[in-house]
Amino acid sequence: MRTLTRIAATVASVATVACLLPAAASANPAWTADGHLPRTVTSPGLAAAPPEGCKRVEAYGANTHWWSALEGCLTTEPGHPAVRVESDCQYSSLRVTWTHVGCRVWVKYSVSKDGKEIAQGDFSYGSDPHHGGGTSRSTWYTCEGHGTYTLKFIERWTEDSGKPNSRVELPYLTVTADGC
Image (cartoon, rainbow, N blue to C red; front, top):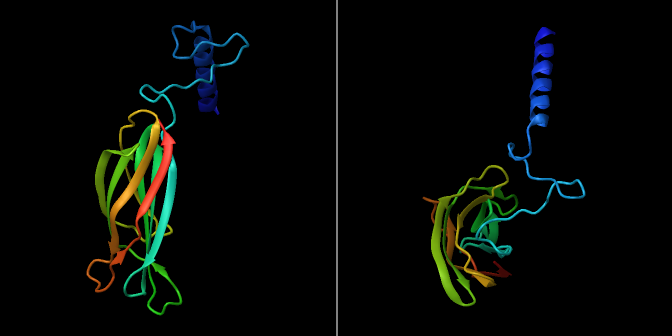
């Protein structure tokens, strides 16, 4: 009981001191004329919202026991424009019940603005069959002003390493969105 009383007294003291500090001395923003905190948030270098959009493609492998899906996105991650890929791989021995399995994912991508390539790269990773089977990876790119941004998955496939005939070639994927 004494500990709780001491904690309450300390909190009250800190709150009193904080209220007595002038606004300029604290990290709090100035209040607006109508008595509210300002709600404008600015991010240096970002005049407008980055482009956002996603597309999903799915395919069976040559051996129809293997199935994969990829989702490609132009998105925002911690305030930066980003490319994200999410994968899901499944296997069915009897084609009745499908099980999420780990697989090797390979994606080569490019990002262009108004038809001019501004970024390219690749994702190569092992997917996690747990937690619903989806595994995602992302990377940032730099916006180059307002325009139409296009994400293309140039090469894309999955396979279960060490398993014959497990490779799944996925359809082309293109995402287009305006932003920045």
